[in-house]
Image (cartoon, rainbow, N blue to C red; front, side, top):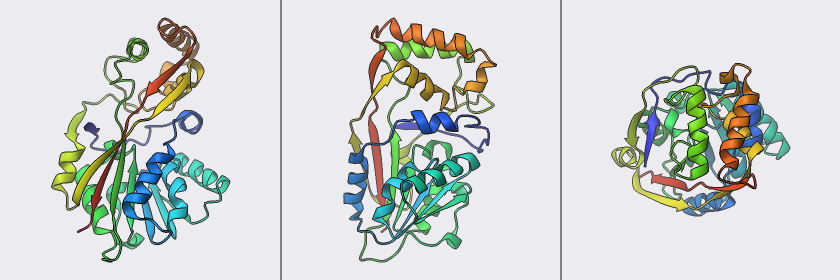
Length: 273
């Protein structure tokens, strides 16, 4: 699989999008967490480090599998929502830290597992992998390692007729290049599997999970506003017209206004030798 790498974190990436992120972003299926738990034989012991934790989806879902959890993200608003969500789910063993994954160091402790969910493409991958490896527990009695979660396609790589219609509308409004926060930048592509193979991790493997999301048009528009490439503020107050065009584009292919998106999920595992 290929994913993009950005050289510098942009603090405006999800500016104004967090409420949409919380309400409309698809959650990972339970099968994903079951797979991670089985792979690392989780038993409520040790510590989890969740990098690029966002609103805490992975950290909260796995918190009961560890004695304690640390979630790190550079976005203050994301972390505030994560804290609120943790309270709602009675996940009291999580510490939230504002920071970049690239800056993790021994001061935060050692961990049984590092997870990265839908955030690896924003990171300096080689650096994050090395620093994650260095923080993993060396106890031989337990399996320690990393789990990187990727979704295999989005609107920019979905060949479905409805998705192509939606993408055409987005490009008419925002340009041919995918927006990244306040800029449009050239995307650099590298293979996650190749990068893992060059890292200190051993036993690299990939698991795929089939996942389907059922959408209404309004929910999908909300999802678009949760992304870095289609934030609501990009439209300078013309969202009513944009939304009307998105609805027309979908209805031309899906007259019921309800449709299914296949969202394959891949999980990359690597282990500490």
